[in-house]
Length: 156
Image 1 (cartoon, rainbow, N blue to C red):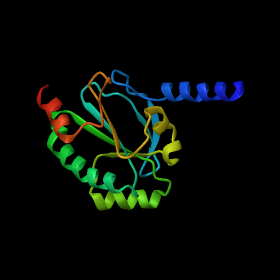
Image 2: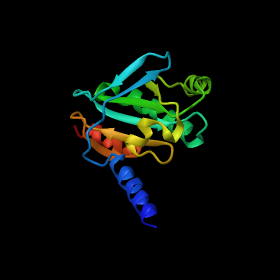
Image 3: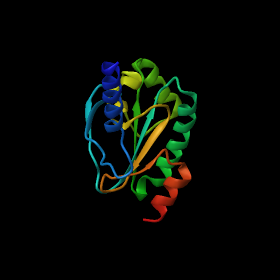
Image 4: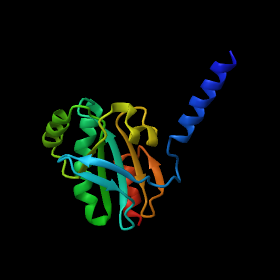
């Protein structure tokens, strides 16, 4: 009985550590882009950064992609950088979704589904999931709406 309680508490404490909270710093990650090139994700002091976790098989994600394409067009010059992180295991399906959805912002892939290290680090439990970081790399919103992102960018 004690072993199972100890194991449960270890799992709970790991989960608590592996989830970003408001005020957390943007973690440095190295992931591959659509061409297989390794990209290091680091904070950008000149831009707000929206990290968007998605997958090609996720209907709500595909709908959100279209909203994010428009948001990027509208706010890129005001300092918004959007980075999509796909949890797709099938790279071809990921590539086709990027093309079909007209995504022109940076795309990275962590191809292990919800077990992907980046998904665990951020605490992604469902898709889509997004995280907005300010120009200091501090997390200021989890799953913000396009209106909330617009308000942040228009108030700067």
